[in-house]
Each structure stands twice: as C-alpha cells, then as structure tokens.
Image (cartoon, rainbow, N blue to C red; front, side, top):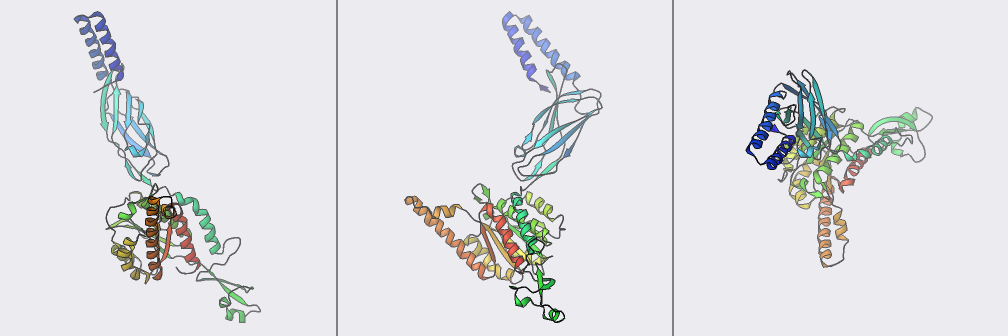
Length: 430
C-alpha cells in the first residue's frame, strides 16, 4: 500500500476541523471519512499483478552522448491502472525523467520513454520498475516493484575521431591515390612508370627498360594486409590521471584511432588488454566489425591496482602472432615500470615483431621544470627535470633495441600514434 500527498493534505484539513470543534464526535467522523476513502481507493485501484513489462531501445551508447530506452507496460486486467511509474537506473546512467504519470486502460499498452546520458563507461543495468496504482480519489493505492531487465553498454567516447579524416588523407597519399599522386615508399610493387629527374636510380627496372625506348622505374605502395596487435596495459600505472583524464582512457582513445586507421589501410587489427591476466581479447575479427568489437571490449575495462605482468603480455602476443607484426604497447613510460618490466622482454619481442611503445606524458612536468618563482617552485622544477630525464633515459634504452617511442600529452597521443604508424608504413618497416 502507498499513501499520496493528497491523503496527507486531507488529514491536515481534518485535523484543522478537529481543532476548530474540539469534540470527540468530529474526530471520529474525520477519521472515518479518511479511512473510508483510503479503503475505497485500495479496493478500486487497478491491479498491478496483471501488468506485463517489456523493454526496447538502445543497447549501446557512447559516453557523453544521449540514448533512449522504452518501457512498455501492458495491462491484462479488467480495470484501468492509474498512477505513477518509477524506472530505476544507477545514478551515473543519467536517466531522465525518473518518474512518470501512468494510465493504462484495461487490455491496453503504454510506452514510457527514458533518456539516458551516461557519465561512466561500463554496463548500465536497469533496476526494478516500481508501479503505484492509485484509486479514483487519489488518496492511496497499491504499489509493487517489477522486474524488467535491460542492459545498456556505455562505450568509450572516441574523441580522437575528429583526427581520422586528416590521417586518411595522409594514407591516400601513401597509397598513391591522392590527387598529388605522391609515390608511397613501401615495399610492395605497384607499377612501372617513366623515369623523371629526381627519382632514385635504385628503383630503375633495367630489364623492362631494355625492352622499351624509355628508362622505367618501379613504383611501390605501402604494405597491406599486415597485422597490428594493440596491447593495452590495464595495471596500476593506468589508473593515474593526467589533468582530468585517466591514463587508461587516453590510451583507449589512441587505440581506437589507430584501429580505425589501420582497418581503412587494409591491415588486420587484434586487441589485448592485460595486467596480471588477460582482461579483454579481440583476435581474428573481420575488418568491418573489428572497431565495434574493440570499442565494446574496452567499455567494461577499469584499471587494476596491481603491477602488470609484462612477461604475460609478451607470451600472449607471441602466442597469437607467428608472422612479423606491428605490436603497439600502450603503457606508462616511467623508468621503474620500463626497466623492471619491459626491458627484460623487449629483445624477445623486437626479434620477431616491430614494436611501438606509447605513453601518456604529463604536460605539467614541462611547466614545473620551467618554473623558478620561489624555493618551492625550484624544488618542483628539480623533481620535474628528474622525471623528464628518467623518461628520456628509458626511451633511449628502448630505441637502442629498435623500438619506436610515442610520448605525448593526452590530447596529442592519439594523432601522434597514428603518425608513427603511417611513418612506419611509408618506410616499408611493417
């Protein structure tokens, strides 16, 4: 049973009447009238047990965007159900409106729409639906919570999508498909053309030239159908924030841009998220569905406050890729994490694969290193300079093993990683 604000208002009016007359008879009459009204409402209210609930609408929403779900209520009873329905979602789902008026005629259906603007990644699960069926007087009614299961997966926002057109234009240049007809520097043979001043003489095809009156050179195009393995470190270091952005989220955004670009380039993309165990795995997905699969796999990832097992990462990569591939490891470039974790494994990886290590740089370090305002600022500058020196040192150690390094702030990491991929492709190093 549920009582409404109208019942409270009626009791207040009755209380004023009792205070005005100050007699027992008036008190009994007021109580009898209010009680009779409540009982009548309970008897005449439509039955909630006869309601059948179902849901429809969006099952996936990108973080920061708005989606909608519909709650359909079917009344199989003989009385009209009038009242209020409350569709419960977790607070971070941003459900609006939380409550709605309800009127479902006997044998009819009504759909209540709820807009969702989620503020956190992951699976947003709908809670119980509470229905209050009120009587004709609006004093009281029946209330019951019903199950109507529904799950909406909140996907990463993919903010770096805005860089994709520029990177695709660069890719078309490398493929020789742009209007400027810039010749790619890959290693797959494309065609023959006449020699022009400035061409590399090593590209001259002497056999073909001997059969023709002109000197012919080979043209090349960047390799296609190469394998890209994106490895996301979800361990302790990924939980840190740079500004207001978690390192893990910035790394995810960079991985999504790289995956979108690589699939457009005709390459195959696999994805792994690892700390002490494999948290997510997308291997062997088709080019048309790999970006959606990677985005969905990222949605439920959260940093785990444990040290990552780089040995597990290396063995997992070596286990799924037998041919030479491009391995992109998104992790922290702090000296402790690299020297104790990655360096012992780097020779094993680079002997079989091309390796890129990408990390989120903190732009505050440069600001602190340049500050000399007071004693405190000088100490901060010394600490920042030491941190920068450490990152530069481990980057130099990795480069000696043939590793490409991408160290950029959160808003620049995604395009910088895409540029590194295009540079390797243009140089024929994939």
